[in-house]
Length: 97
Image (cartoon, rainbow, N blue to C red; front, side, top):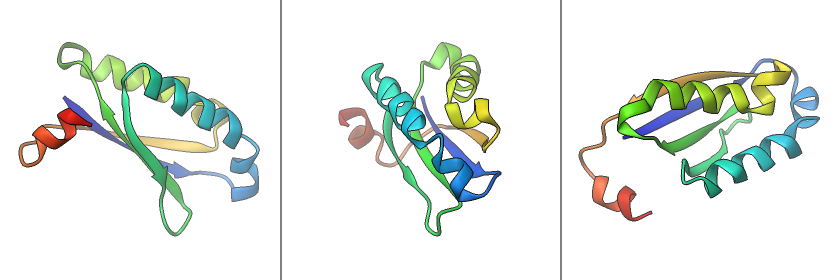
């Protein structure tokens, strides 16, 4: 199962940037675990998005854990919107990624 995480900044960008290095390190740990497929900032710079690959038998718990571990969330500078996504068209391409 795939999921989208939309992160919206809740504080001024300067406050968000104070947690940027920790957030990026966290994303690298998600990538190493095979959970993160892709990520990047939104334009204009109001937040970011994550494309996630999560286990079918633990979608909600995994998404909650991902959100709760993010330094942006912990510091209160980012708000998450978590969307489970049942990909049909293009799934083979994502599965290879």
